[in-house]
Image (cartoon, rainbow, N blue to C red; front, side, top):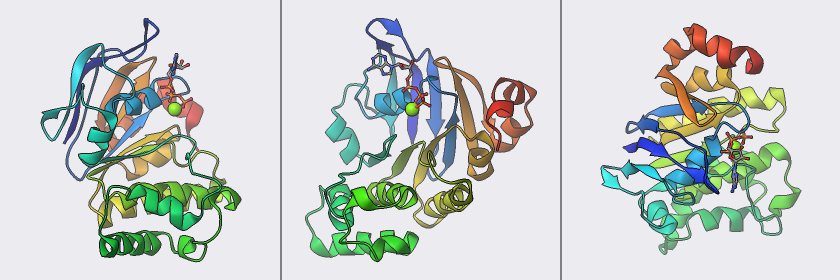
Length: 238
Ligand SMILES: Nc1ncnc2c1ncn2[C@@H]1O[C@H](COP(=O)(O)OP(=O)(O)OP(=O)(O)O)[C@@H](O)[C@H]1O
Ligand SMILES: [Mg+2]
């Protein structure tokens, strides 16, 4: 469904992603792991056309998107829940959610989408008139994912959605992500620093280190791989 084919990018002529190949099958949940500065958010920005590949290409449903505009890419069915949530703090929960379905004109359709979000995150329904900036951290995470779901995307790119959540909430949060994947039949690219939690819900995973993919495989393969344990797992497990 989504494929990066030998993609390299630069920031001000400094190489960042190097020869990154990655693919996400329809209806699969793939995680992209890596420590700070590995290039995870850059990968998301490259997928949605905010960073352009210097080499290689990207394909969505077999169509090349490496030169498409961001709005065109989004309209093809790719939604992003960006790092740091990026909500509109002065707008209400309802207004933030509706922005996720910005391109949809049919009111009934918007109402149906809202109901799906409230089904997944009941607490949001009780807070529709509250401004987003006054929500708790956990509620803000739910709202940012809810906004992503409002677009009814074919694929959802989640950039560290669990960041800043209390450990107690993190577990519940990963359960919700796998529910979204299962119930909405949405493909998901889940970016995480918490390798153990992400691999526990993912089908497959990739490990990014200094802009390169250093390991890939099924979640099970990665969990038992010595390279992965040494390079990454031990520092971030838990
Ligand atoms: N616009 C930019 N100009 C120059 N360098 C950048 C730019 N954006 C990111 N970088 C650099 O590229 C590297 C990768 O950044 P990126 O945001 O992709 O990392 P990340 O894996 O998402 O890290 P984190 O887990 O901290 O979010 C970092 O060293 C960062 O400083
Ligand atoms: Mg990042």
